[in-house]
Image 1 (cartoon, rainbow, N blue to C red):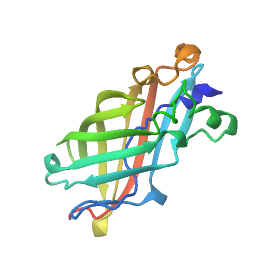
Image 2: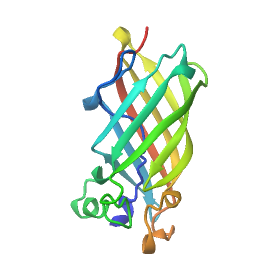
Image 3: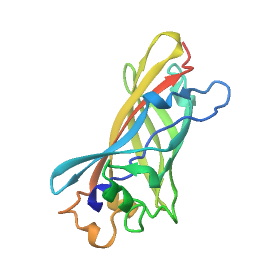
Image 4: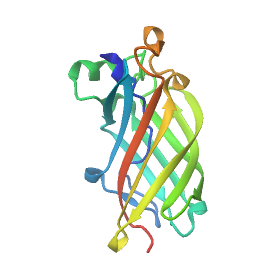
Amino acid sequence: MIHRSFCTLASVLLLGAAALPAGAQTILPAQSEIGFVSKQMGVPVEGRFKKWTAQISFDPKKPEAGKVSFSIDTGSASFGAPETDAEVPKAAWFNAAKFPQASFQSTAIKPAGAGKFEVAGKLTIKGSVQDVTVPVTLASAAGGNGTATGAFTIRRLDFKIGEGEWADTSMVANEVQVKFKLALSGLPQ
């Protein structure tokens, strides 16, 4: 049951609701989600992070000037099963007592086609830092609103998620897909 828990932070990744500086976007939390999919004995298991915050400052016409950062409460990972959710914060998985937050900080944003961008940055989970590139699709709507979606894969063992007996990848796969949907307001028009 813990196997799901590792479901990595995937989280890592991206963004939540926070007060932002001028020119920044606001996340609409009720319409946004950061989730993850792992495989337990070959079967996909989905989870999500209930608590996260983000700061986004982004102009689709000048993506290289943009900045994205977020923080995820590692103890908020949920699979919707109380016994599994109780295991996620434990030392073998996210060790939320010692590492209560996972984070992402962008280092570069570049265009990748119409409405598509690549956000490179540093992902920190459980004290381990890895470079990741996150593909993002931005769908703009009227009034400066829009939705940013994307998915990327991390290797949970690179972040020490699922230590000890849970390091066996025949039970819980090493790859975890992180998925996000972020409803935004304040996009430049």
